Length: 136
Image (cartoon, rainbow, N blue to C red; front, side):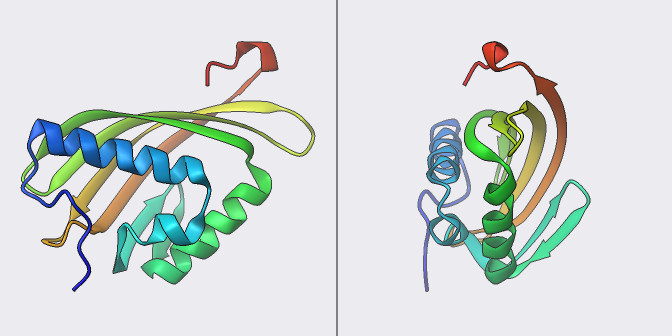
């Protein structure tokens, strides 16, 4: 059985580790590597999209980075308990036309006993910004 340490129940230290691992993985922009942190039957809500399973996660991420260029993400632990973690995040990217955006949001994560994320619910808002206003 595959395991993704640290395992729940989470302490503040292990929750922070999980958040940093997620940030590092997403900043790699490697859909396969990222998908391995999720259970085979993972369920996502990302904005208005519903994504189920690792194969759909990989396809979603491949498509995401075709349009979100020069992507850079920062995650912050918001709350944790037992097998759940909530994060606040922001990321920046530009589109093909060169317009920069900052996306803000919250994610609620639920993990199985093996430390794989079973559920990911993301609420995200985008704001167009000027290149000189970038922070990440």
